[in-house]
Length: 250
Image (cartoon, rainbow, N blue to C red; front, side, top):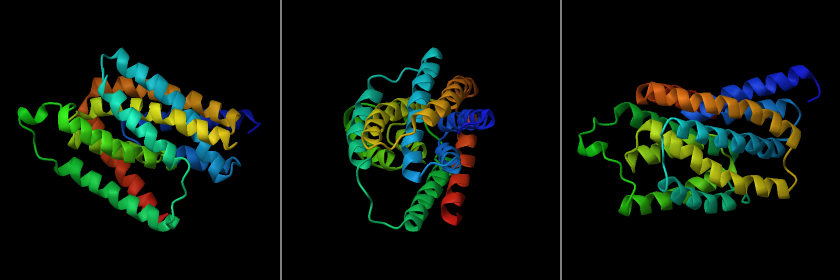
């Protein structure tokens, strides 16, 4: 990555991916192929992408906070659980063929789409957030496994996080996104540390990509709060369908 055109291109792709990651998820489906296309081995690309994700979520968290979306302390509790899971996910090798894994994940994506489209209309009681008691503990357990997945591969983890937060904790999609970026920020620290320890990060490319991801995440976080759940839901459904098709057929 020596030419100005490559640097500009990487920043631009990062900007788009940062927006996609913030509003829904799946931005890594853009950034990982680009990093590999620019010459990085897949494992190095995976680690390098985490640098962009880390900086993106710092700026995205600030963007949501600037719009008055506060998620503490709930996001910290489940974030720590995901952090522990990510330590496992970033170190393990899964004994399953890549094609089979992709098809299983594609099915999960389709289930998420059906849930988002056919979710029953909520009553006044159904709109109450459930972030304490048994729902909190259930979320802590679930996010441990989310962390394992996120530490292992990252791509598509946002969809799974949104499904858990909207179904288990009754959070709006906008607030779910605000929680999501904090959770990913917390567990990405450990993933970056492990990839860095193993020499699996290209810091130059990661920091260039981080510029685009950060700016895209900042603008998308503030924009999504203004537009509300309706826009987020439509965008989410489109991105999940695209990801499911890519995983199943490519």
